[in-house]
Amino acid sequence: MSLERHRIENISELIAVLKLTPRQIQECFRVLGHMLSTTQDKRGSLLWCVSVASIAMSALRIGRPDAFHKLGTQSFTPIEAIHLLKDELKLQNYDWWFTMFATGQGIAFKEGQTLIDVFKEVGLLSGDADLVPGYFSQWGEGWGRSHESRIRQTHQRIEVLRSFLWSEGKFATEEENSGSVVFEVSEASGIGFDGLDFGVDPFRDGVGDVAVVIGQNVG
Image (cartoon, rainbow, N blue to C red; front, side, top):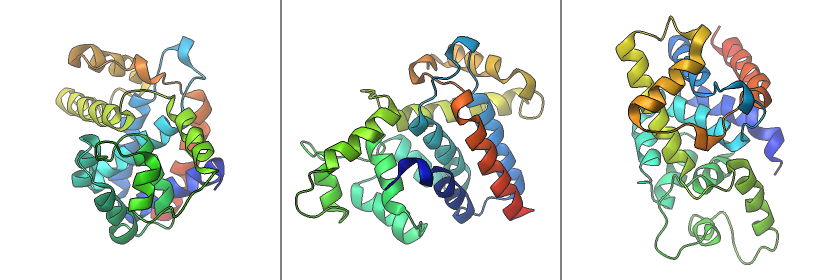
């Protein structure tokens, strides 16, 4: 499966099945605008898995807060996660999203379980597959090969940022200075943003494309 080809389509489908209202979509992308802002010296370093997870988690925070919190606290078992993606949300590429959340450490593994074990458990892999390690390595590069849970980090940042913006009434007034809001939240909460190596340039066009598609669907 091509990771590049499916990104925007999969994000658009996820937001569509969550049935977000135009106002909720605006809120989602406003939070993302703050989240994905960065200092000039870090532009160009955005990791694609981090950016996709940021959009997905922002949308789930509004449309399925139960799933958002379970992913963010790594409380989903593999079976529960595949049920959500395949049977509840009925996502066409549920296996792609499962890989996203599993490799980003948003799904609970049993002690000693590997990614291959988990994929076999949920029926996404049978027998031996020589190409599987290479496929997973592409996702590892997309996450930046961090030892920390990227999904948990994203969950924390969204919660802190939403709380800050609502309490300060900055949802409507801080677009022009979103970078400063992100780092103010980071300092106040003790949760650093630097570790995610956020940069806005590589994904900016993709976010715009998704917004256009969604706007056409709800307009």
